[in-house]
Image (cartoon, rainbow, N blue to C red):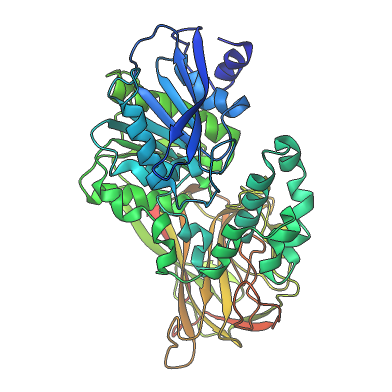
Length: 542
């Protein structure tokens, strides 16, 4: 045991180590069918024999904090761990083409593992984000050697996150491109300087130039993402493993965060396993994508899950398959399934005078605002990849003239919202190409407006179809949540037409995403009357 591993284990509250003596075999060469060799490090207790093997495949390197967290800490607690750098990263051969080689390379790696004299015949996978997608890439076809998985803040396909609601996730894609293109040159400086470097680039048009401005050259995979925006585009098939999820038989524990960029698709994977008759576990905490508290919780949960399914040690495995953190109440709740039994959907209607209430709205004129893509409505907190993510006071955002707010009276009693949230809005726009963004907030007695969950929908001509009177009925998924609105607090719905750069601004011109430069303002109207009962749909407990 090193001083660093002892300190990290204490910091993330892992149980005591089984051994202090761990060997590390560096730069093992794992051959791929096309002749490329991928490098891996093997961590194992000295003299431990044929222990179960954990496979961790990553684009972020094998040494330092990463090797400590995913390698040594688990080796000290009774596992062998093979940490492998994916194609084109940290000495592994070939070129990084994100997501698209992970099935073939992962299965070839498993075949190599099965031939090693140290392999016991028991394999498991775990890891976060990209390290989760690579698990899904091989999960169906790994064979009976795969005994368990833990997939943290991730999903079985990344296309939906890349185009969440139909809009390009500019903050995530450009930030990640900058990270992977600079991490081997100077990892710390790449991360520390990213925010300052990228901030002006988020405003640049056309988008197909920003990768070169960020890293000094055009990045093929970034260009590919821009050039394939349509759902159902077969280009994404090589990176989409969602169809195979129901066929995965290994026990799966899914871990997500309420402010994580992959949350809805983590929940989708859970639902697909449930429909197939599997028994997955689901844990969702109050975390952003890279929150240290979330990573620590995932390490603890992974250890419990892996010991239960590879070593038969089920003493720490909880009974309830679903555990979620209820924000507002700041407590964990256990359920038999997700969404929880007993949830009922309640409609809170937008009211004249910017109110929000269960009653059907009275006759009234619509509320109007202008969205100008030259001064796009900014993102403030929420599900971002960067450190700006999470809950934030939205008062500065709500003061903008391009943001409408609809607020309830102070609640007479606590209201617990647990499940998927949705907004159904009747709107009209001066443009056929436009966006609508909706956000649920909790307003405390002091007036602080804290974002709970949100979502965006990009409109294109004919989608959705216009109502007979010319209005559009749009349904916006505001992502799942678990939140208790306390007595005396107010419920607020924001409506706007952007959250830039989390979602690339809609130029309004209908030009192709990558080459668009013309910016056209949109005049928007939101209706709330008996014929147009715009509403916030809340999943209420009890």
